[in-house]
Image 1 (cartoon, rainbow, N blue to C red):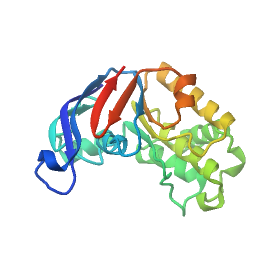
Image 2: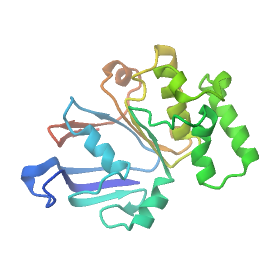
Image 3: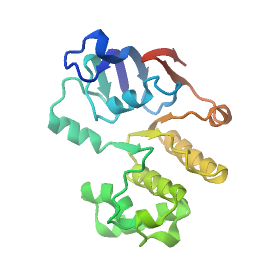
Image 4: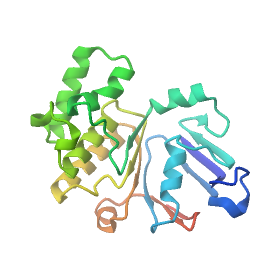
Length: 224
């Protein structure tokens, strides 16, 4: 599913030289249907690793395979097709403010060419599940931070992607909402979706024990 071998990522120097590396010699593997926490202090490299996994960047060195595709060598067309198999929950939501809640969540299904009847049923049910059934027509700027986070989560999982990547997905949620989110991610994981969740919340990790990728100063210091 995911395999990194001696991966490095640099910004600014363009050559992959060690002085510019923000990730160094990262090697790990996640099997299909695996779950990993992504842990480490601020500045450890979690965001940079997520940039590689979300295909927002390519490795400066080493080999990185995501969903069976070697992203270090893939064409732009291959990466575009691969992105449709990945659901991402961004820390800053990245909702489209001019689209309704319904249309934000429906967007991945429309891009995939799903019939509108199916889209309506699936989106309505997903928004009901995350507690936003009464906000289908609302615009994201009118919602609270926690409500926007739930819209972003619904959009990420609506298409049943093969891989879900979440960056601090419970940061704007209360305890009950966070519990609901973890139940959803756990159910998707049991159905075969691979999940990687970056978080600083040690209590959450303790409540849902699972293998962790631990970063420190751009290096992987723990995998398990």
